[in-house]
Length: 118
Image 1: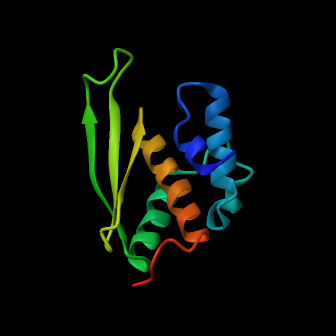
Image 2: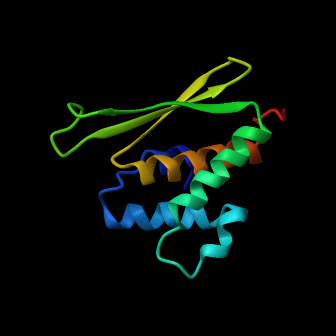
């Protein structure tokens, strides 16, 4: 499954949660959590911090839209590239989903050499 397909998954479905967790475990710094049901949120935060400090990318506006869905709030985070070529929005139904998808997306960008080092 491609990265863009993963970040578009609906986290409310159990199967999609499993796909996202599997994708997280393929990220080398998170592979040590293979015995756990879910990668800890704190570990996602630390990895995002490391990525944003090492590469010319940062996260902006984690915001909530309570009117976006009848099923609950939709959260959004904007990924900003310092070279200003483009920005990316990541969406989710909870903070954990946003952080998980951000890690998957940014790690994929790193692997494709699309992130410039500071």
